[in-house]
Length: 300
Image (cartoon, rainbow, N blue to C red; front, top):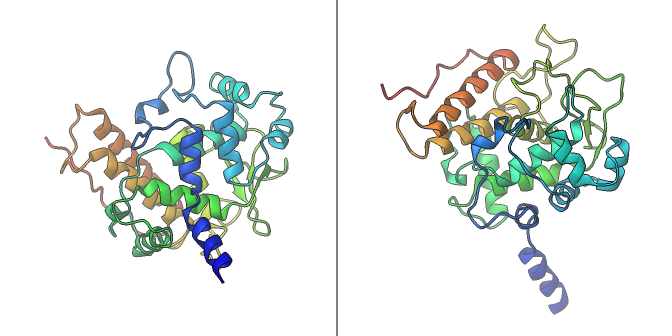
């Protein structure tokens, strides 16, 4: 009887994917990615610097094979060099470096604390319960980083990475309904209307979180909404769009850091306002509910 108990104890103490990813990617305890890195800098598409070891760990966390994927996307022999060069690539860009940036954002960005996610106009009670239950299952309390729970959920749900078939509808990513594999496009059209910037690390992270929700059974399926050739909308905020919006809102409120209103001179507050604008656009286009009034107000 003692051997199984010992094995259970060792399993419980094993590092979770988020902790391993952050260690491999060089994050210090409590360190988070600054929002400014989403902006173009020095001729690059963003300010992220993701080395080969970090990129490989992120891919392995969602059961992707770095070598196989690098070959599939004609990325050469050096994953780090490939991801670095993508920051300066011409449009359209392939989906692999964008997915790596998104996973890096999930591992390193500030989503606030688990207990800070509250039900509201942008957050259905379902997601408060999902996050709370996932945190409890990992022995985490309400003060734990929401990013830890989110990254671990994504790593648990997505079971591989592959190339999106060439005849598939233009997309930034898609989850296979039969295999829970995340399929990435060979090129992401810069005019793809799913996001303001389909190459942004933050947007890629939210898309990955969205797609991971489709791996659950039973899941809330998308429905027809008229403007798309296939089901792409949700009836309310309990589906994958709702999960994505809840995570976006968590980041917006984390940027405010408890402030009651928006200070236009604070760059983090400006980013928070932009995230809420993205939330409004997402709901307006993809969720069949009345558009909530904006929550964040100016201090003026």
